[in-house]
Every structure is written in C-alpha cells, then in structure tokens.
Length: 76
Image 1: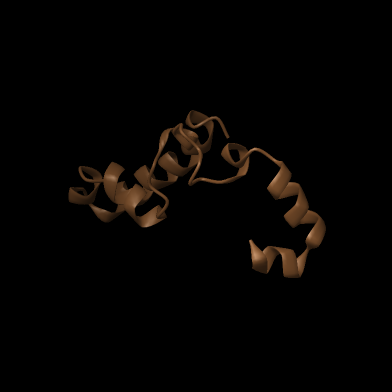
Image 2: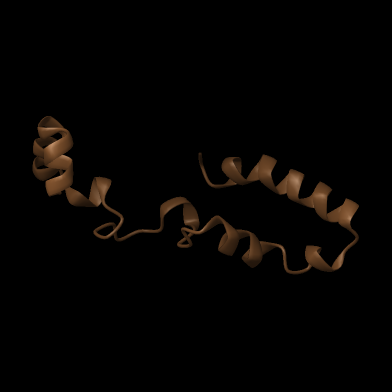
C-alpha cells in the first residue's frame, strides 16, 4: 500500500476507504469467474487433459473453441 501511496495518493485514499472485498483477492470470499487458479498455464492444464492425447490439429481447434467460449461461460 505504501508503494501505491507513493505513486498515487488519491488512489491510496480510495482503496483505504473502499471495502477490501471489492478490490483485493485476499479478502474476497467467493470464487471469481468460477475459477480459483490464477496461472493461465494451470488453467489450461486443468481443462485440456483429454485433448492433449489427440493429434495436433485437433488440439489447436479444441483450444480455439475453448478460448472463444471461455469468457462467455465465465460471465465476462
């Protein structure tokens, strides 16, 4: 927070006054976007286990389709 204060005192003041559950993952009790993994590689590894066994062309098409529907299914 001190580094934020040094960069932008107004932002620091806003964050101190705001509810931390609205802006801090550490204080948020729910599941954001229905996933708790923050690393994109971990996210892909979690969903592509079966697809990895398929030929490369199928895998590329599967990943394209996944990336197209992922934001929609997670409410983004």
